[in-house]
Length: 149
Image (tube, rainbow, N blue to C red):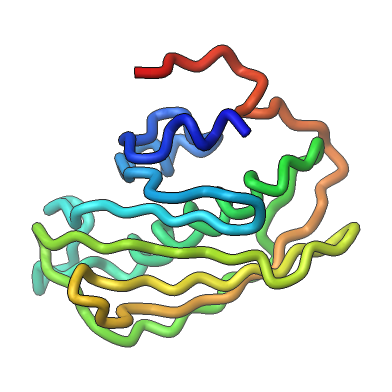
């Protein structure tokens, strides 16, 4: 899997421009699981200088997307739902990591869970999502001629 070549690097090849904006590091990827990490930047915060709930949902959705990409499907998937429990705040400047795991990959629906931690292993959020097969072919990241640093 060419995706493994990018472990430890800041990602700029996400199929999602929002994911590229996050400027996350791909910490781990293998079939059915992906872990990303990033620092909470000022533009990601609410008025209290903690990560904004919408930004946390974006982090979770991106992590889930990479777990789905790791399945190496020829088809695109899109979210049917995203259920998030916000459990603990994280401040601007602190780093978090999100680990997503595919629970079940059916022919039409993929179920994924995501756990988000700070670097002290406090659980910040937990989420689950169902994604549906769109029937549309996708360009596989693995087939794109990517620069390897």
